[in-house]
Length: 407
Image (cartoon, rainbow, N blue to C red; front, side):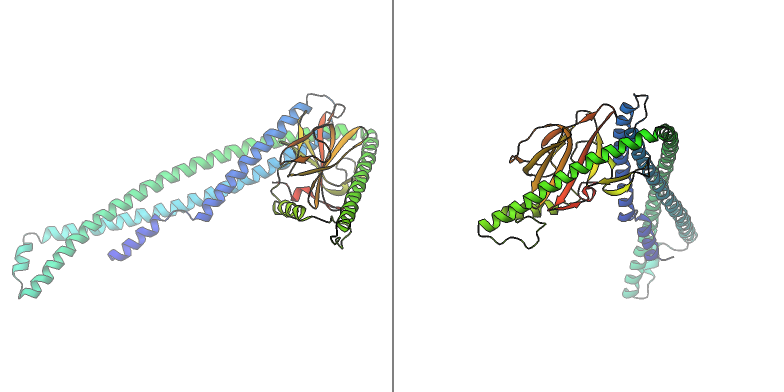
């Protein structure tokens, strides 16, 4: 085995895990931490609702959210275990190669030492040089002896380096194995919690089904209120759009051809552009919360015969929580339906709506900043829940807020 070949093998052995693999692990750990925080928050809300003996749809929504997140957490742990197994296999193969290389190097070094020992009395280095036929041969012999001695020294250095890498690799292997055991313990713990949550979900579903007639009527009444809220919001937005186009014509500007969109001033266009550039990064309209109702029209999870239409998303939060603006803008309208208030904030060509409030902290025409508190979310004593209805509109077109708020 040539010195060059051995050096190349050493370089290969010293290579660490690829950056992509490291990034995978980093991403998995970040997701795990985020899910654990979300589960802890949802569990806190769930514990508050479970203080009441009566099963509620809020409990079911929170449990469904926790179950979904815990499944994602377990799936992430599975991926981490698989990644750790790959790392363990990689390290084991590396250790096998390194051990073989060290043994080969030691054997080669032993041969060199034996050879040197056998020839030590036949001639000395000095006599070997002095017995040269001419000056050129003497120079070549000096160079040969120097290279030979350097090769022996490098063999020793190479053995030491390989042994150091081997030691580090074995330590890394032990760390990976310990990490795998921790992950497997986490898996078992999360699976037990998931089983408990599934049992609790079944209990609540069973209890709610026994109240299906009452629940059906209640959901139907709620949907009527929601429809009235949606109609009022849509009407206000349509009036805002018409007003903006009329003002544009009055000021000599050309109104937009799209009658469903605002006629924007240069400043409003800039604000609208900034809002659009933050799609997927907008802060939540609450400091903490769990999405309990999705955007669109779909059957109710408990009573499939009742169709639920949601122009935004519902977010369960803590009692006393305040809604906050998701972006800077101006309060366009403040209204109420069935005694509960809603606030509409305009961001250029976009409108954000915060409904189901019992207190409002802002006034119409007021400028607001991102994350500024705009009202307190209503606490429903009967259902034992605090739930915000949050909507986003682009002109008169409703859009799914989940695509816009941060994940």
